[in-house]
Image: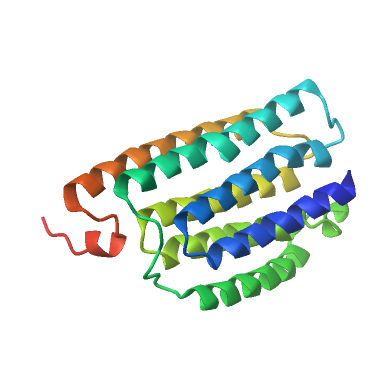
Length: 214
């Protein structure tokens, strides 16, 4: 199980890097959906209770919500506003990839300095969670399209979830279910807002929105 969890964590950080280098919104949604599915499986490979019914329930909830429901909402949003690519990012795709790789290195340095239990120091969970949080933040601030920023927010939240798994000796069920609900509501509302903005202004570029005056 430990080898499987390490493999999943490595795959999760690879997906985050891929998102930083992709201009296709449809591709980004598919990648964040795949990342959500990996997060759904991950608790079953980390915690000792493994296939306990509660663990299976949470894993199924994560898998369905992050891997299916939220991506479908985002696909609906880009279909309604008729956009396919992020063409003018604030930070280019090659520099974003380089920054993402640098953030992965920084996360391993930070993980060594955090006061965590000795068992976690040999795990990828802490550094990967930090790297995912930072790459999600980078995506939010380096992209113009609102949909891409929502995807960055989802990556950011995925990193917070991973960090929660790392510092808990048992899965904090109530907190995680609350986070799932918050994310679902936030993305659902974002989809509605993006749709209405596109209808009103024919654009969902946040750069253009900042130029609007009262």
